[in-house]
Length: 486
Picture 1 (cartoon, rainbow, N blue to C red):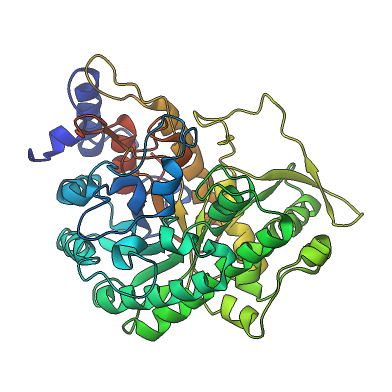
Picture 2 (tube, rainbow, N blue to C red):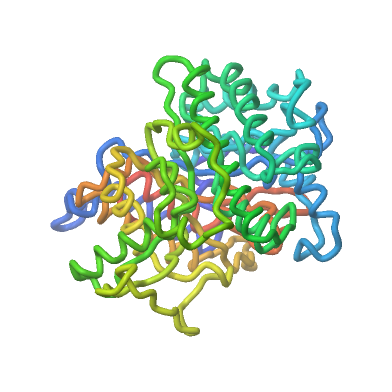
């Protein structure tokens, strides 16, 4: 690959070269009255800046080195399931181009990379016989990251359940949770000498609600409530078993915690009563997911609402589910609801979002950057969490290359700048956010949208697989360099 010089990184020719020159000048030429940026705009010293991807979305090489089938292969081959009729089997070939992609990370200045390990690469049938070559790719990736000064943060499950397990019930079966624990233990034993930060499962809420309730994600089911609740329970049980596997098999100093897409309630007007109401709402919105993980119990209101459809809970399950974690990762894109305080139960009134509420290129991604302030603040105040990471935040954009070949993704820059300003407010007020992983490094297979939605800092030509940093990459590079919203 060509050398990623500083000039090349600043994305090209024409207008972009002028922007690059302005950036260099701004960072080398004193300005009248200019000094350090005001402390209130800075992130804490040592704040960890990173980026993230997932295995099925970027790796490709779906039939390489004995990898088994996942539920996404089966799902994507069903007509009408994927918007553009594509699959993630080829991804963006991160499997073979990982060195190029690590060089892109290094040029960005990130100090951490959150990636996922493909369960079907390690256990092609989900359990039983191990594929000896299954972790070889991750050995190479981890070694390359460390040689580049980038710390690996490994997610053990990012939605690519082995199809063989789905055929035996998937997350409806307790056996899947137990198989996950065994898989997690194997991975940690193999990689734990170099990887010290693990997330057991990514976004349990998303893969259960969209895969087993709405059916728009793999495996494409719409279950009745009792079966859905049992799948929810088995998934959070797998989280607890994964935490225990990391504890039992990791080296000294290894840490573990969830990466959950928290449903966040925001005060519609920032008064004390509304703030309390937003906290109550956030706890209830997350009752079968983050709340039970951190409290070891389902809320009374949620159980009452489920009635006879509540999950069957075996002795000891809640203790496993609430196994002690070292940190909490939050995937935050958009608010779930805005609330007003109410004297009547449950203590809040959810306000409907108006049709005119602004959104990004993905219609579900309602613009509400203040969620980056309230999500970690709620987690701190509700559950006393001492270490929080934003494990995903980002947006789809228009992402059409201009005549000079550059993607001037101002919509993404706008979104990120606003989110980071609100996140910085949280850190300035003492909310213990330790780092931020931008989603995503690369344009990739965006689940049910296929390749029709782009979330990357780096544009990928899906025909040639050429990587080209976008304007947002230059923006993020500046954020990292300044440790402040740029």
